[in-house]
Amino acid sequence: MTLRKRYTDGYQFDFNYTLSHSHDDASGLQTADQFGGAFILNPLRQRDNYSDSDFDIRHNINANAVWELPFGRGRTFFNGANKVADAFIGGWSMTGIFRWNSGLPISTPFDNARWATNWNAQSNSVRTDGSIKPCPARGGRLFDCNLLEAYRSFRNAFPGETGDRNVFRLAGYVNLDMGLTKSFNLPWSEGHRLQLRVEAFNVTNTQRMNAPNTGSRTGFGIGLDPSTFEEDDIPVNWMRFVGIQGAPRVLQFGIRYSF
Image (tube, rainbow, N blue to C red; front, side, top):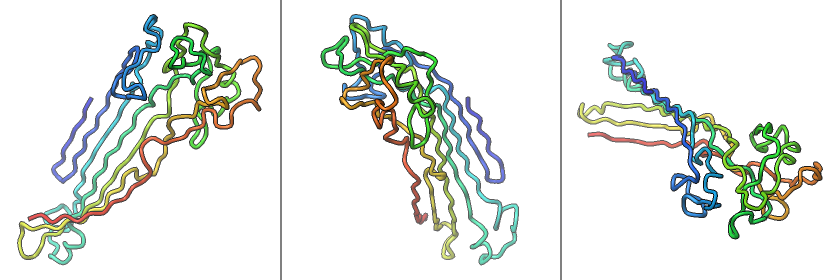
């Protein structure tokens, strides 16, 4: 769905919403990993991994706007300003680009190298309690409010099992970019203009977390028995986020001469 509007006073905006849903047995080059593309863990039971695609984004919103501020010569306010006054109050414009999308899917952690279906690749662990849901915290873990319960809710894959694929969701992504420009008509020719620009990417410096650590002391995944593990047995960094989506705030400045 797209909504677009242009006003006569120098303001225009564009709003877009996309609803989508993708399923597959293995995702391809859109999210290529160490296997170089789509990878079928168990070719004898390919449909075991039928789930949301790695790149499935259910909701996606983006919007952009340009606003030429209505001040200065030829504009709504101070239309009769002289050249000196217009140099200060005229020629300003603002731009903005906003994006929000729901989170990408993520699978259960790997088992502890049981090689349940493939001698060279681990299966995902299997949930024993489907009611456990992620509750991510910034700078924390994917299961921040129910860490012990979540840790105990997985088991290693049995022989022939591929585990649970893409049954959880990471936090969504949000970003706002903005720009401010000032244009001057140069005195020696109306066709010559000088433009000063300042632009900010991720204006709010919002950090949405990504990629939790799924390893254990063995280095091969969680490898646990839900009936025997206690809180002290949880690896220190299990399911702790180790990265962010996007980048921190970035500022850039520019000068443009048009003739």
